[in-house]
Length: 196
Image (cartoon, rainbow, N blue to C red; front, side, top):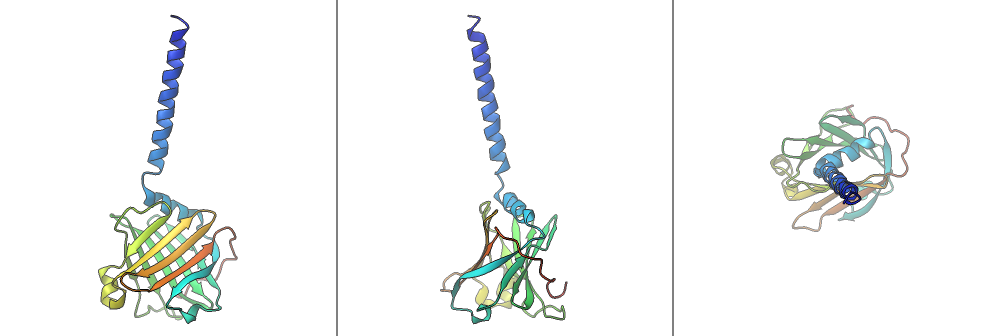
């Protein structure tokens, strides 16, 4: 009987240890929005070049221009990501934490730093999403200032070390826009966005 006791002890210990490891792993990934947020913070301060992969109808204002996004500031509850189109530094994506999830807003400025008439549109997440993908349906403010955008859904995807995408679709229409940024190759830090 003596040889069996140590074996039972070791077997029980291994089962317990494996169970703990699995539980820890699940808890690490139990909040996809926290994982998504952490992935954005990991590239804070870095800038990356992008490419339009879908634009329906075609948006000629982006044609032939350098596309750059810069994860410029990362505060505990807010991440600001300027998106530059050539020399146009008017756009900043603002991703914030709320009591219900995450929020995406579009801060648009004129070159003198003043706010554009159409600014701070966007929306809040309605679902937990995944660690790599978060969707932001248009909110009431968006519908009030841009009625045509009332059915917009913005998506931000991040695959660490690979790609970040900003995507727009308009439910009930063919409107689609998607730009993807190569996270494998950071580029020099651009100047600040207008107004900052």
